Image (tube, rainbow, N blue to C red; front, side, top):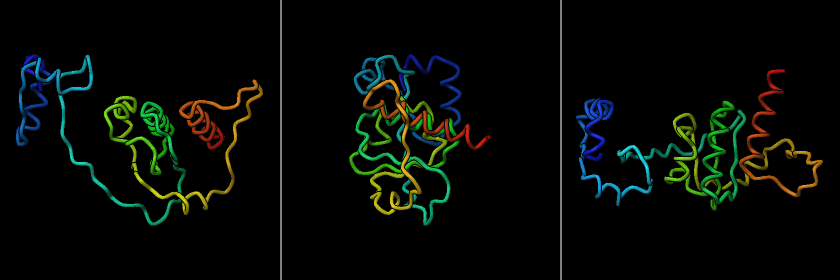
Length: 163
């Protein structure tokens, strides 16, 4: 946490909540060198990522990311999935790391609502799909941005389920 941030009541409240943990206060300039965000809130957290392992069965709708390398797209897809009520996201090798700073920023809190599985070999999972999903594109474009495509599919599914 920066010295400047600690001047704010909200920051002091957070420190009070986590007082049993170690809180380090840094000069603003040093913190700026450590942070990858230009205009951040002046706090960095180090948390342990829990690896729960794959579920024995996947019965509900999920999102499968295979080779989505752009971190901004991964974060946007996670955000759309969480907004659409999806609980699980499976990321194949070659997909951007779901816990990278850029994915976390573009996910805007979606990580707290999702079970995210990384480096998942997707052969068995994909073999269980009933049908491929396509999006008609009468405008003549060859493809859509993957994040836009995911949002269209997720919210069309929501519309169909609500009848």
